[in-house]
View 1: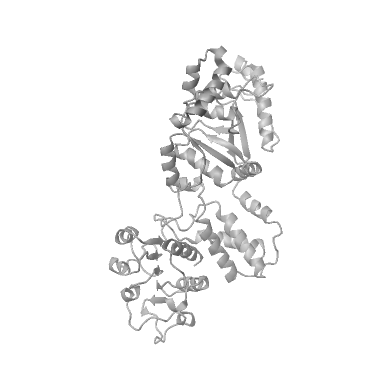
View 2: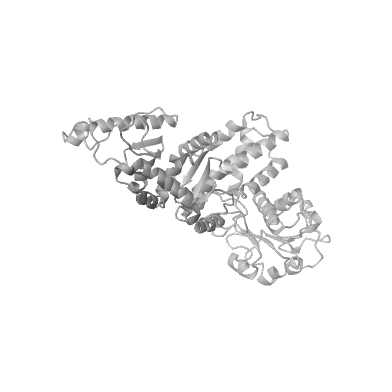
Length: 479
């Protein structure tokens, strides 16, 4: 009931229909159907606008076999058929048997029909058949192989989590409504990339094919549980009120594992002082998604480099509607900036074999352009390397940004998440055969990097030698 209610709210919004005006037909009159109907009424549906059917036909006032709960919805006309009831109906809710909703019945429904065919394993109407019959349909089923799966796993774990955390004496209507509204609101937010990957989607965006969150969305625990806990407190059934909501949400997220905790640590630090970050390959979908996440999570202010037409097309595809700077270093529009950058580059490298013509040529290359933006303070950082080799990316960084004072060697560090927490590996891409002195410098730089993450470093030097089993020179220098 809670999940279908969240789906109903969002479906009505997409169909631009008012909840107190819609006509709903429900096939099924058992506990699940009644629970859905009752929650719909709490949301604003008028009971008299609900027509309900069971295996014996329409629930009407002349029937003597109805329970007290069913009598509330006994508004159907005597001997009315499902087809007749569906004529002009806005919503069909199926909690009964497979294949009872025909294409002809579906065609008789109102414009922008909302169909929740939730019988399992065979829904009341096949999803593909329904979509082929009505192009304007908004549909959900109970199946995972169709969009908009109405699944109790979206609610139960997190509703119970919120209720238990405040020691609620019961789960009341206010707590259910809070869960409904939290789920409905979550579907309108940008979807984490891990969810897109899990479901093989380019980008899930609020719309006909995405009206409720996916079961694997990691945000469910930090969205639904706090909403339920807060509702329990406000409705007076919580014995152990939560005093620090931010701490509570952090504790919930900690349950997702150390990798999630590390990402949140970095994101929270970045949010305190968001920087301007150049994404040098923004005309690649994955890079643009990263820029979108950085912007929407308030981690950074993205600057996009690449083919503007492609970037705008991809932005539309993934629902990235924010107005952010877009530069294509190769276009005439950037002549002035590109020539200024080329002049600066030439002045700094003319005694190292770089001509002005070379400088102008290099500034058409996005990694040089991005590095010069950082060099000149037009950006604070850059992200690159998605489609280019490591040397191609590193060379302009060394020429235009250079090493920090007191640093004579550069190296790369990769962070790998393990069950014991993050592990930092250096050097993974720059120095092919470092000396013992180089290894010491790399270790010291890595130590500083690890401390940036708030972690006390424990450093181990690795070679193929096992406890001094080899006297090879490459093992000796590590020793």
